[in-house]
Image (cartoon, rainbow, N blue to C red; front, side, top):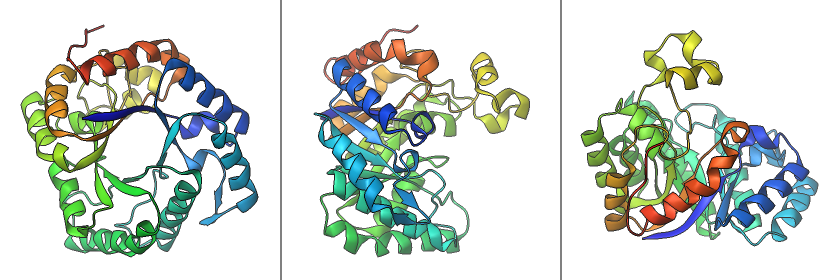
Length: 290
């Protein structure tokens, strides 16, 4: 069951601006979203791994004036499989931020990608270190697949074995990881949905940037032309089989769906339609191709 539909507020779009945050919150509330995913890295509330109380208080006041509910997206570079001590400190501060604003989840990008056992063990142990903090909050820590399969990401979640550490399936990342293989995509999705608490949805063509010449993928305007990489397109512009995917979602999933559209210069006008598509998909199915 899809309990709420949200949208991301992108780190780069905010670039520290409280006014931009207000603008986007008001806009997405008018469109009809239930919640917004907030990036602390875009709001300058954490410096050198520590919360800046004055800044946090101002941001919290802005968020209190919105009728939206919130999730929080942890900073992308944080990798608990690495040996950087700052990463654990930054994610801990992110949980504090999320707890203060009353967010339901903190999104963490899985670091281990079927590499050494040392990295896998380090990530699991670091996540376990955060469990005492999470237990004292209403926040759930959700582990997102980036370049991993759902199966690999689920290994990390199940190894932590804590009721407030759950799976986040990023549908776009999964389709890229599997190079557009629809059947394996649906198999992996089915494998993880009952363990997932959040889904990220956006479209692409299943063509990883690693498979393309660097000149075609490093600039978004060229990447769009060639259909390469993690494009975060509105639903229906790429090749992800959302109708079939949501048949599984409606059967096995219970949680929050977040639409991730980063480039509002190109796609802001598509957002209301994307929301309507998600509402239809989460009930009766069916999304038309562009």
